[in-house]
Image 1 (cartoon, rainbow, N blue to C red):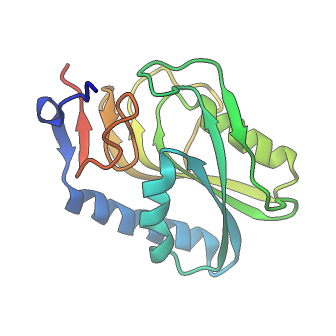
Image 2: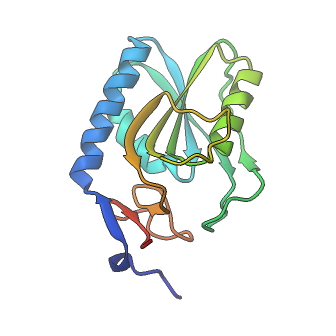
Length: 177
């Protein structure tokens, strides 16, 4: 099996920096919730780590569910949106917090937000661990809560993958330019 070498990548953020960003992200989300309950939706698979970082830091009561939508399918280029699983928790009249690993072009995040509103959610907000800076974002893409900013490079680690590998990398890494 040919696993890409992590030592060829540049570490953009150390684990301590990611943990500090998770603290700030949770504080901002708690400010929005102000003790009110919500449904937290983990965007599978990438947001598993981000969700795991955030949940113990959030003080408001919440229900956890997941949604599995992807464009990448273990590649470095996006394709058509593919829906694998939708949440089972009813969203009608509820506050919904979508948790994702990265806001890149934003097609998946915008589609999930629109789907949640179509399910009757009272309010939908999105939290992402990283926001990638470029001008290719879909017009409907946005994140209300952002942990870290990254340059326009392919990144992996902390839930984000490179061809399906290195979601468990100790930090956030970028491929060589």
